[in-house]
Image (tube, rainbow, N blue to C red; front, side):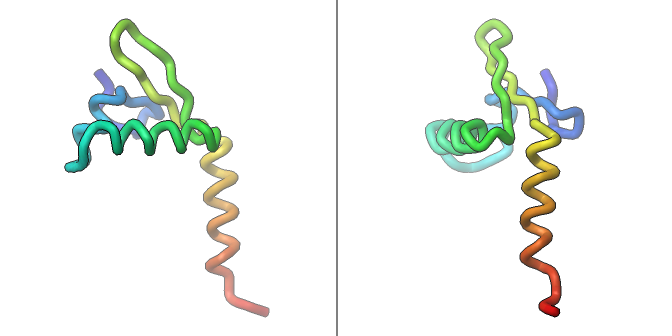
Length: 72
């Protein structure tokens, strides 16, 4: 089992284990991130493994950085 996203993937259970809220909350958040194209899910037996879409994450990072620029 992958224990962190440093490698780009992590099981749903491992992600949920990092937070104190209930499982359905984690599931909803994962579905939102997946719908935004930031995560992709792949089933591995009974486990769901989520993978980061790095190109979409970079696009989001660039977009957010635009808001921190000093006005001209």
